[in-house]
Image 1 (cartoon, each protein chain N blue to C red):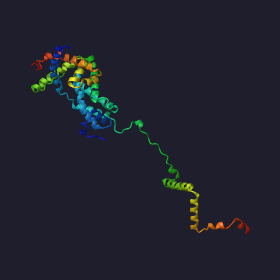
Image 2 (image 1 turned 120 degrees about the horizontal axis):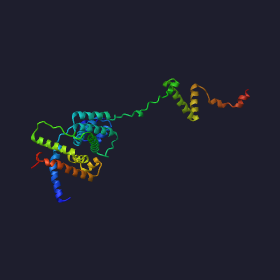
Image 3 (image 1 turned 180 degrees about the vertical axis):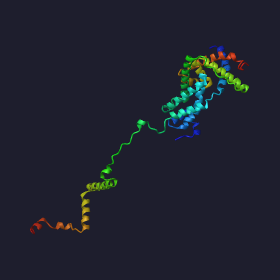
Image 4 (image 1 turned 30 degrees about the horizontal axis):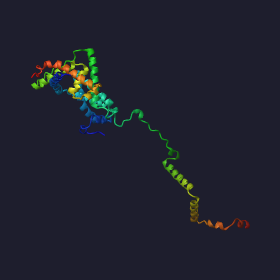
Length: 193
Length: 127
């Protein structure tokens, strides 16, 4: 039996995955709409490359579809599992990339005219992305999960498969690294008050 | 960690907050093409409802039709009825059978009770 799409907005990711495993196509659409943007956002932050982030997103979601029939409800959060898969896929890509080219990280400039505030925000985001790309992988992952995705430290520990103390240490070192790279540009980025 | 370190860290957090806010606000939305690809993968990988794996499908065993031995189901059912009657008569007490046969004899006009009035000696004496 198929559930109507509207009725699925209140269901947990766990429940939707169980429905998907039972052949409900509406559950597939609902999970796609809910989880794909989340995975893509994280992958783009970690890789600083939209095309590669799309590949990683598709691969991560495919792994989710494949594991659905064996998924045991209540054991782990779907989003945590997906963050973990995405982080690992990104780490693999970054390792390969380092072996090929060092300067393939540059983001294309967006030359679409916009209001001043939007431009300042975009400039800051761009500066942040550039600085994040220069952090060691684990520090970048921890900082992005904590400060961009808004995960709590215990969940980050689960995603990265390390202790909560190690997460705290990674975040602290990551932020210090970002501060060194970014705070010298405060005036340029409209932050010197 | 000294008080100075804590204050420095608080300042750093405050300064970085603007960057993190800008990062969160950045509109990283996946393209329509990606969404369609993900959905297509989902459909391809989705288990079919109620589908059995190939090896679990058991072909029906060809049943031996016994009724054909007796000329079809009509003849077979008649035979089964007579068989049931036979079993019934076999298990019923002989008294019941005697009463049944007596009733048959009466209806046929035979005097079965008269036989008991002649002894074997009378018959022998008459030659």
